[in-house]
Image 1 (spheres, rainbow, N blue to C red):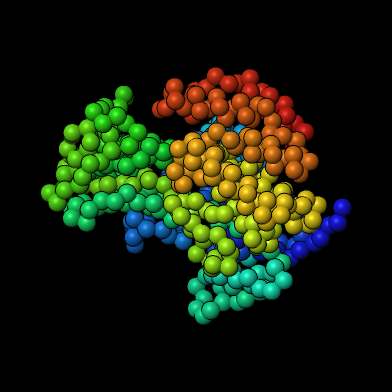
Image 2: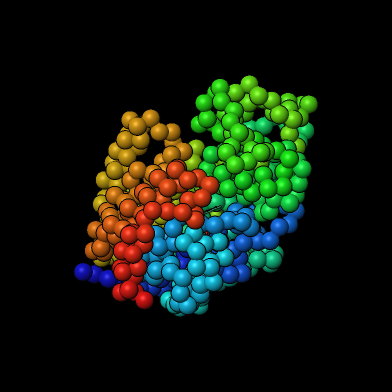
Length: 439
Ligand code: FAD
C-alpha cells in the first residue's frame, strides 16, 4: 500500500490532540500541535476560582471544571486503549479511587504525553487564529503567541486536524433582561462558597447540573433545579437534602426577582446557574472549510470526522458526545492517520455526502433535533468498532462496553453514591487482567 508522510497541524493538546499527535506520528507523519494554554490536558487543566469578567460567557483562559469534580465514568473504561488509566506509578497516580478527582485525569494525560514523548511536538501558548485553504489541498495556518500583538505567523501544512474541544462556548437559556438577579454558566462555576445563604436556580439535567446543584446545596439557602424532562405538575424535594428541590422547566422570570416554574411554584431567587451545555465553535475556520454549525450540527461531516469536500486534508477529532471519549478519540485518530497516509481510501465525495444524508434521514425518522447529530447515546460502540475495523484494530473490549452500561444503570439506581458503590467488580477484574499486556 502507498504510504505518505505529511506535515500536519493539530489544533489543541487536550486528550484528543495528544492521542491524534501520537497516532499521526506512529503512522509516519510530522504533526505540530498548537496549544493556547501553557500545558497539556485541555478540559482537565483546572483553573482556581476567580471572578469571571463575563459569568455567562466563554473564557479562553480556563476550562469548565469545578473544584469538586470527580469523573463520571469508571477509570478502567475511561483510559486510552493501550495506556490503561490505572492507579499506578506509570500514570502518576495519587488518587486511586475508581472515580477519581479531576487532578488524577490531568496526571494521567501528562503521563501519556511523557510516555509517548509528545511534549516536544507541542507549541504551547500559541493560539491558532485562522485556517485558510491554499492551492493543492494544503492549508495556511495563522498562529500567534498568547500575549503577542500583531497578525501572527502563517505557515502552510499538508492537512489540519481540529481537536479544539467543545466544552468552552456556553449555551444559554433565554431569561428576560428584566429579571434582576445574577446569572452564570456552569463553565464559570468553581466552588460553592460564593453562594452562601443564597437562593439558586440550576437549569439543566446533565451530569454537571446534578453535581453542581449538590455542591451549591452545601452552602446555599435553597437550590431549585429546573429540568425540562420533569413532568409539569411535579416539584419534589430531593431525598437526603433539606434545601434541594427538583422542578419542571422555568415558565417565566419576572422583574420582581421571582422565577415561576411550569409546575406552578414560584421562587424569589438570587442566582440562575445555567448548566445548559455547550456549543461547537471553530472561530479559526472560514467558509473554505466547507462546514457550518447550525443548532449544534457540524455539517457536513463523513462519519463525524471528514468534511467531504475537503477530505482528508481537514478533519475533526472528538465531536461525538454521550460516549467514552478517550478510546473514541484514539480510534478516530488512527483512522485519520491512515487515511492521510493513503493506507485507507475514503469513498468519493458524492458517496460520503450520500452517507451523511442517509444518516440525517435516520435522525429525522427517530424524531431527533439537529442538535443531537453528534449524540452517540445509542451507537458509540458500533461506531468505535467500525473505526477499529477500518484500521485493522481489535474491537472495543467486551468488559469496557458492559462497564459503560453498568455504570449507566448504577448511576440511575444510586445517583448520589454511584461513584462509591457498584456491583461490577467482575468487570474490573476482567479489565485488570486485560491491562496486564500493557503494564
Ligand atoms: P479539550 O480537553 O477541550 O481540549 C481542547 C484543547 O484545544 C484545549 O487545550 C484548548 O486550549 C485548545 N484550543 C482550543 N482552541 C484553540 C486554538 N484556537 N488554538 C490553540 N489551541 C486551542 N470525559 C470523561 O472521559 N470522563 C469524565 O468524567 C468527564 N467529565 C467531564 C466533566 C466536565 C465538566 C466536562 C466539561 C467534560 C467532561 N468530560 C469527561 C469530557 C472531556 O471534555 C473529554 O474527556 C476530553 O477531555 C475532551 O478532550 P478534547 O481534547 O476533545 O478537548
